Image 1 (cartoon, rainbow, N blue to C red):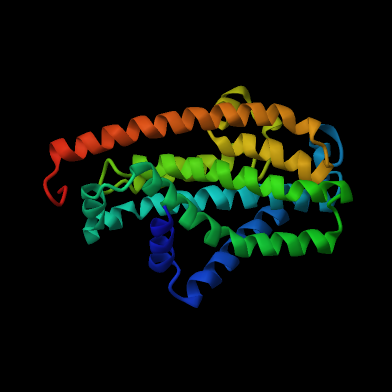
Image 2 (cartoon, rainbow, N blue to C red; image 1 turned 180 degrees about the vertical axis):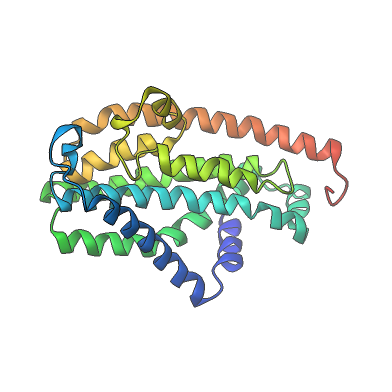
Length: 262
């Protein structure tokens, strides 16, 4: 796993321009969502979650931190096609290396370096608006662990799915846009109709945010309990699906591929 993390770093983070992009793009997307809310009075009705501008900022900050964590691993999985083109994926499959370690090594290698700069921005904004309760400070490490673990499990599944095809770029659109729309990143899920709530239930990011937001915004552990149970069930199902698909992918490669798979 350590070797895969190092390889991910060397392949993906090789210039200052990469780090600059990792900081600027999330900030632009965040402010785009924030100013979409700004013209409206959301202090009444079902939107009273946004009683103030600071509440909107905290809601979006936590949402986009989770989204960027998950999106970075979707992009990492997308680059699995480059492994085929470069010939390194075949070498990996010919070695006795643990397949699960490889899959999750790719996930962790992409995750930490993709989110740390935006995490610094989140801390800066939170301190600036002075919105986070003092009692929530003890929950910050827990929140990061929840996001990192759930994103890594999701990233493992994405990496395995991208093993099946040399060109699975369409999956970027299939997973990315619905995730940011239905997972509660930019708007609370309780305003969704039933069909949208069903879609949101498919993404572990939905449950991760159900845990992180009460912890950081309200300082309430009890309000996160329901999300904890749902997230654990979701992650167990995803890990089981990942293991099953990994075996299918390797069998498919042995049956239909040659030394270079294609």
